Image (cartoon, rainbow, N blue to C red):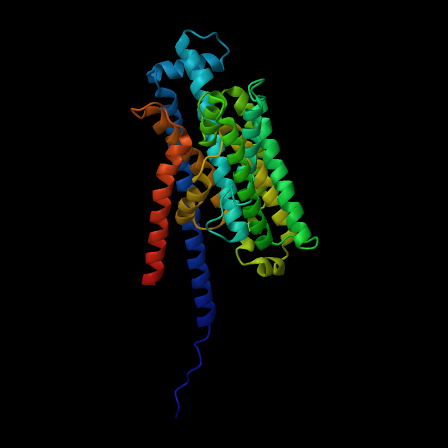
Length: 371
């Protein structure tokens, strides 16, 4: 008589319930891990901000920094020059670093998810080079010194013109439709054109020593002499752009499945792509406008955060903002404390970011080979 191989009654539901419980446990652990990483980043960012207020050519104690911030908070007059150094020099510089670093990282994470390209960064559409071209033209023409807002305005105008040009060419090439591959190719071409024009303007400006030196220094990316005016100029655009990108976190998750997969679950791919690209351009244009073109923040930081929390954009984007701000803030502290004369922070981010990114690529390649 053959054995009865039918499943025991109730065994399948029990297995289903066990699997659901395991998935729920895994989900809770992942959520707890993300929360712990987020709280840890907040604490480290706060500590780095305090360090940024303490170090510099004039060494200050923690009590002096706290006292200066307290007097500013309660509207009291500055007690000494130390209050001016903390409130008017170091604090706005640190806030610009947090805003710019966070903005670059969020834009990089969004573009990497949108184009499903791990090498996509805030300069992928030529926005950074467009902003640089606008600023270089303003410096060379001599209008950048008239008011503090003229240079950021020129840089932002260059970024906006670049985005409009890229979209116009891509839409014409796609006969009214925007495709990711077309946007990338047009962005690379327009970015190369911007670089050539920037080099031409720079070569013409080198005949004037002051203008040439100012252009070269700005192109390296720097946070020196940033004031509250720069914070007020950059913060609204960066925060609005970051908020728009965060609002599309679910759609970015769906786009990881590909454009066809995202469309099959109800995502309007063309509309989401347009909004995310424009928001990223807004963030990058404003960041470059107040700090210059700073590399590797938007390329490296999203990779590090993704390794820690995964690719879900609802957690990835806020943590990328904290991580990018932390990375640029630390780089700025390093730039100010080196034995040599203060160097542009863009040099420090490149010196740290390039080797770190190569290590990540090599580790990923090794892991793929082993598997």
